[in-house]
Length: 413
Ligand code: HAM
Image 1 (tube, rainbow, N blue to C red):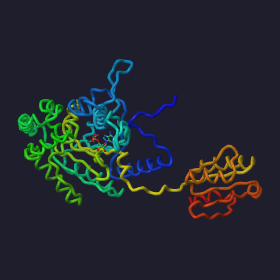
Image 2: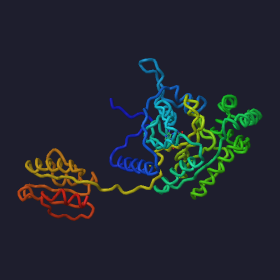
Image 3: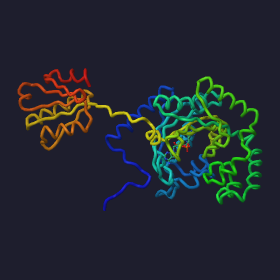
Image 4: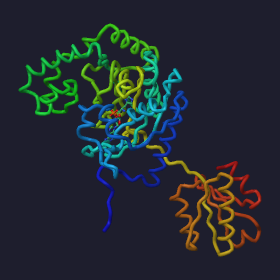
């Protein structure tokens, strides 16, 4: 029996896994520089957290969660997103007591049972940020800017789509209006949207079916029914973005697929992605902390799909790194192992071969491991306490005494 990975999951193998690590580091460094602190929460949570947080009416909760009963008959879910977990942790650890603004970033796997396709997996990684503890429009702009500048630094062309979806004051009367419109046009809606009219009419905007999309083009939009406070906030966000030179398109039908958003909602899209064009998405969620049992606290955040980002970043030539020790003969192999261990202890990435391979075979192995240097240690070299160091980039080589090897590599690696 040969086992295969689950549908919608990916193995990252060398050398592509090097690209994975490199961009993970670039993203994390970028968020660190932008003043966010790393947060890691469990991948398993109680199902109720997402049902309540992400929202009962959302597609994610209705169709996509990996939920199961554990041995204690408790319903557990593999997190489909991190925002409810971070809010849970914020409340559970009483971080709100600090009365300050918390800025978190995260990088980790999420799980959603979706139909796999390019850019859509069942296990995928998200990079994201959350700013908790302020309703200042500056924090919306700061979140958007963190993603915009990240894409800029990685040379990723993108479109920022922006909207405001109101608050718990202006949304209920708007929803009545929308409901009325949808009931009038019920015959042109799909079966699912007919149910949505009653349960959560805003979700109809997420429907991908052509007749529903067409019907919703003429629907009333929340953007045109905002209360004064939401209007002012939205203008402030836009002014900050303009000031930062971040261009955007206002998309009144952008509502985002999760239930907790209030006011600002946004998405970064890439034309290079095809059907699944959202690089990332986020928005403000001023009610979620209260809904999950915490004190009234405003927040804003955003998350992006890491595999999608890897699909659109320019292919960089893998960087040659470290050293390969090619040893020939029993004594040299023993000495080679010792040198490798010492160099590794000094922080130099070092590889070696097994099974008494020929020099040619070891050179081939070194080349595919993408090292910068190969140290060749034969019996002659061993006798004169020297190694031949070959630079794999420049195709040059020189003899270096064993005593000077570490210094030489330090200078050149
Ligand atoms: P989301 O829009 O559900 O938002 O997901 C954010 C991003 O994750 C998407 O734009 C997409 O790039 C990626 N993504 C989602 N599903 C998949 C999938 N099946 N395969 C690959 N990539 C996927 C959230 O998750 C919110 N928690 C974002 C947020 C943070 N809002 C406020 N704070």
